[in-house]
Every structure is written in C-alpha cells, then in structure tokens.
Length: 304
Picture 1 (spheres, helix red, strand yellow):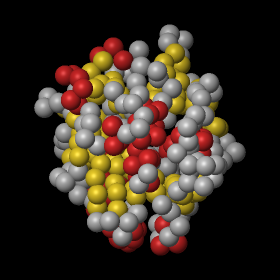
Picture 2 (cartoon, rainbow, N blue to C red; picture 1 turned 135 degrees about the horizontal axis):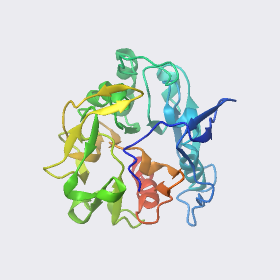
Picture 3 (cartoon, helix red, strand yellow; picture 1 turned 45 degrees about the vertical axis):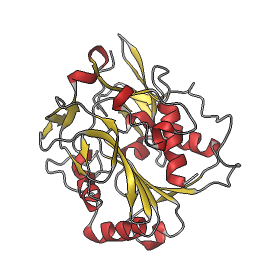
C-alpha cells in the first residue's frame, strides 16, 4: 500500500545527503536498481543544454539525495548539470538553459518552526521572472504543505496558483495505493510533454498540491470533485487553502517556457519499505510512464 501523499517523514530508513556528510532518516530511499541509461540520448554526452538546479533554499530532494536518479537520467540523455547555491541572481542564471526548482523550504527541515513562509525574496523573483521572459526555461514543483507555501510566490510570479495542504481526487484515484491516476483525456495529448517522442499513456501522482493557471495547457487534469485537505508536517497542520484543477501545467511566458507540477515524486525513483510492504514510487514504477514523461518534459524545455 503506497499511501505516500508526497514526502512522509519517519525514522525508518536512511538516505544519505548529496552535499553533506550526515545521514537523515526517512521511510524512502533511492532505488539502486533503477536504470538511468537512455538508449537513444537526445544529445551527445556532455553536449546538451545546461540544467542549473537551485540548492540555495533548503531544497529537500537535494539535501536528502532523492534527486540523484533524475540527475543521472538527465546526464545519460546528454544534459549538463550544475547547481546554484545561495540567493538567485543574474550570475546564477546567465549560463543556464533550464532552471529547476524542487522542494524548497523557507528554513532547513531540521530547524523546525511553526510559521512556514515563502522561500524566495521579491528581488530573487524579479531576477527569475526577467530571465524566463527573455527566453529561459523553468521547471518548478509545488508539493504538499509546507513546500507549497515555500514556492507559492514563485508560481504567482508566473500567473500560477497552488493550493496549500494536500490534494486528493477520488474520481481518478487508485484508492489502495493512495495515488491520483492520469490517463486518457486526463492527459492532454496536444502538448509534447505527453505526445513527445516517448510514449506516455498513464502516470500517477502521490498527493502533492493542485495548480491553476490561465494561459497554460493543463496536461494533468484533476476532476471537478478533487479536494484539497489539510496536511500535517512534523506536528503542524497546513491548509486547506485554495484549490486547483491540475497537477501539471506547461506553456510559454514571454520568450521562455515553464513546466509546473503539483507533485515531485514522479521525477524520483524511490522505494518505500517497512515490515509489511515494499513499494516503488516514481520513474521506477513500471505501472506508469513517468520515465518517458520526465524525458519528454526536458525535451520540450530544451526546445528539442
């Protein structure tokens, strides 16, 4: 039973941080058997667009190392990878072709505080807005509380709103696994992220938040009966505030491109394991086409 509802904290299994010497304890870990090899890469090795990843805002996936399978997959597809520490400024973006924002927080998750806030300053958002408007490509994830609050101002800068709490959708769900399933008309085949060179017929989210944004294509449609409910994070309840109709939006902003997702777990390759069950979540779950959707997403962001 997968009842993941995004990123669940528990002291069970270890996941080693990418850029730290300490270990943090969570119920999820990277799947060591997930193949990151791309048989027909979009670009020759180390010759593709430069993806710069924000690691300057207490980014949970980066701190815990859960982003590593995605990085290895993108490298195999020919992309170059770099990180941006500290505050966003022109120097952090000038060389980037694609900028990736995933699971930021206003403070480190180890520095527990009850009042979670947005992670980015108005000055940082002005820099990012100008960079995208002038031709940069941005991929950003919201997630459940408190990640939704942390990224809400960034999304609003580009005309996208996010719910605060966690999203459920009984109309489209795999109830036993705690997933929201997207297939058929709920995946918009007008957009290359779905209708790209790699087949995408079915994906699922694991909770996260709901998005809405006029002018963007809704590539992952929620039902009219989807709900936003409160989410407990380390003893603090967040939401429910707001509601959306999507868990995947894509479109143009000025001369740039934006892909926004309400759940980040599809871009991971995790194992959730306890004494009762062992579940695969993300690109390593063969039930869904996340691996292909991920590669199609970066194809579109790169303009290839």
